[in-house]
Image 1 (cartoon, rainbow, N blue to C red):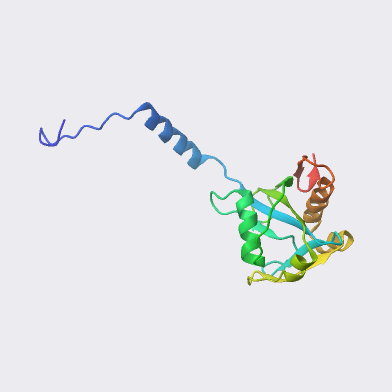
Image 2 (cartoon, one colour):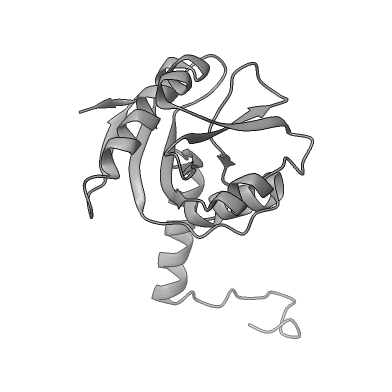
Length: 179
């Protein structure tokens, strides 16, 4: 009925597509969401690994960070590298995906580790922190990275490094351990 016939408005029947979209939107709002991070393994001409010293936590890390809402892991990695290092990276393949179990105040998350490739001597020498989130950066040998990174972060990066010799392969991890 129209508003001029008794001031009663009738709702327009929803289409099947509208019903389906409403059902999916409700499901999307109720389903669990995962935090997503994207890290990048860069190496220099001597095969040393690039580590960064974040100002907001006590341990060193590899470059990268958390994805924003509706941002792909690849785009998150590229954005973080650009924001923190001022570097336009060319990412290679995903070396590993690590499910990180809940810890402390954090829910679980997925960490995608990308191959950042071997940087030229000039590229490596030009890297500088350009964001207050980083205090410093340096290239280190694997043995030094094993001491500087948190144990689970080192397991993840060590697994990623092994994938460099396995073209076309991506490793799945849970808390840095192969399953």
